[in-house]
Length: 166
Image (cartoon, rainbow, N blue to C red; front, top):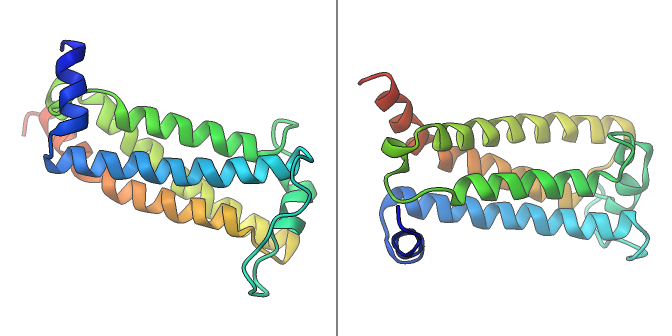
């Protein structure tokens, strides 16, 4: 596909798959924004993370805990940022008919969003178990992941059916 045609399709066309993909990109950016805020705190650039005034949430406590630094010897905000960048990249890749022309891309996006959702739920459970509090930024990202998985499914199902000849 010519880059001009791809540009037009991604920016101007309105088929249901493109609308859902745009939502996945937007939700990935919500997750990335949450990750950036957390990472700024974890690197000492921001001194405190405001949390919702609900006892359940304490982002400052959670994001300073051992839990937040034990993976890859780096603040987990950076890991969140990287994962949402990959999700946005998969949502943005390809043109309008990618389920037929590049079926592995929507299938990869669906698999990635399901994996992200599972991981986010698992980490939320661990976050609570280790801290008796949740990070509101991380839980916002969890909701974004769950919604992204739901949005990615229709195109992935069509791509899989195409690959299977149905």
